[in-house]
Length: 257
Image (cartoon, rainbow, N blue to C red; front, side, top):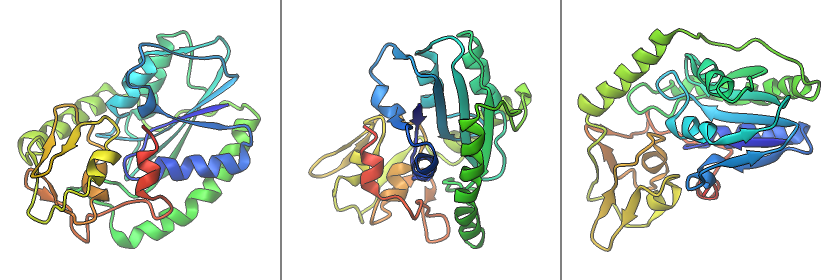
């Protein structure tokens, strides 16, 4: 059983670890490690996707990976997708991509966990309960996976949600200016932002930090920065908007590459 995961601030990694407690043969495989591959062949009997939702849909890095994944016939496929408020159409987008390969998403499990959004942050008071309930949910999910039981996909298949997500992305980029990334004078050039970036989009120089054009909006750099020295346009993380999963550390994020 292979578990393909992607994580910016640690939620997906925490879920994978809980799944491994119950699915003893599960092999965690970071999606970011396959960025340079033209094709990924998987002959497993069971495949799982563990991913966040971005703009009410699956992240583009997960979408691109799924397109080049080769799956054998009759593979049981499930997804555990976490979100702050709603899964949107994430499950259905993933299923559509799999359908193009003659496969299907047999089971989908949604888990509410703190959002890593800077503009629309999950209130701090709600976060402990989310973290505490996740292991119990994963235990139930694991029993369904072991039985290879089909489960209806959460969320909606509405194309309108996909449009709303694109509008949200546009607003963040053009109104909040998240395309314009820079470091403040608090930056110590420690290099953590460069090492946690899953797509190698950041380069730390002796006198500056440069950001490329391949950002996947995971916000790993801004949340793992120990000095909180990175600005995304007008957005800057503070005590209320900062978030990393408490069970995960920055070296776990770095290990995805």
